Image (cartoon, rainbow, N blue to C red):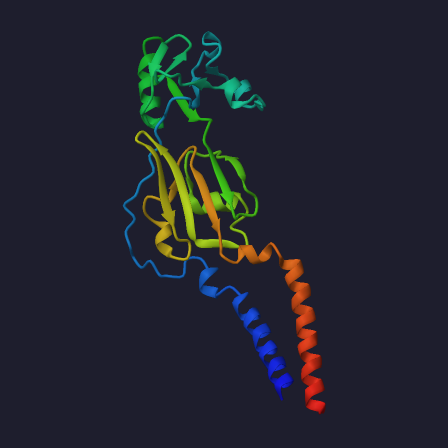
Length: 255
């Protein structure tokens, strides 16, 4: 009788192990809560900063008169394989960029539309109605932690959401803690952390909705990650324990 109780206790222990090794669905399903008709008042406004690399293209009837910045039809169709540093203008430590013909232009803290308007005014001293296109080339984000493809990603647009950033990294991994995601952002006042809970639809609105240049997205591991480190040994042990429990139970029933 004593041996039978030991085997029954062992079976119960194995079953409890299976139960606690499973992740509750509420911890792995994103955007469970209904955000309703919540109005998102957040807005994305990227500002140029020291070290940023931008392109400044001038479209004019006579582009050859402005080599290095004028864009012709032929040049517009050529694929430019140069790096961002080679084909762009860097904002220096004083917040200025040096452009052909117009010289120094202070752009630190300006948005892209504001920078375009300012540069356009500078070129009006040389020609009537210049068409200026300004683009930021150094928009990059880092996605690290429990994602499928952690790494550094360059953003080809001027705006990207948190969900799009995670999609670039192949989505969160199996052992990700979806309630513990952080956006680490550099501001003029220093580094800040923005906590995000992906299981709640409120993460789709607010300050964490958009990613800014040089943001770092960190996805923390869940508590079950530690169990995955010994998954092979645990699997073998569980198989042996289950087999022994089954054999023991059958043996006791035959008595």
